[in-house]
Amino acid sequence: MRRLTFVELAQLATAWAQREEGRKAELAWVLSWLVSPHPKRPIPPDDFLRSLIGDAAFVRRKHAEIDAAKAT
Image 1 (cartoon, helix red, strand yellow):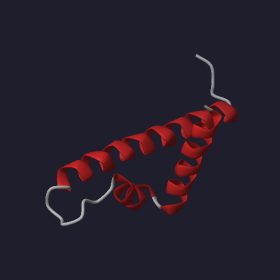
Image 2 (cartoon, rainbow, N blue to C red):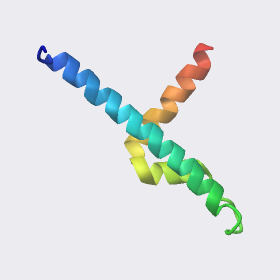
Image 3 (cartoon, one colour):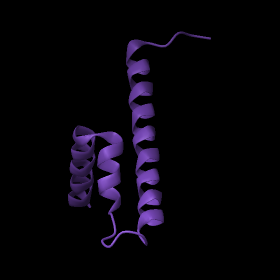
Image 4 (cartoon, rainbow, N blue to C red):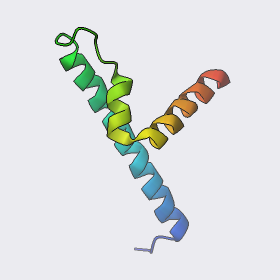
């Protein structure tokens, strides 16, 4: 078995962070779906996601979605 290089370790950490953000996005969607019948105005998943991952990560994620939409 060989050792990990610093580059491989950084790639693993980045992939783990992206996977965690994806899980939090799914959780925000489920929370929005479960809570939506109760308030007068349904709460969008983006509001939950912003509180789960923080403002900086939320903005980075939205910019990545916009860039991906422009590329297609």
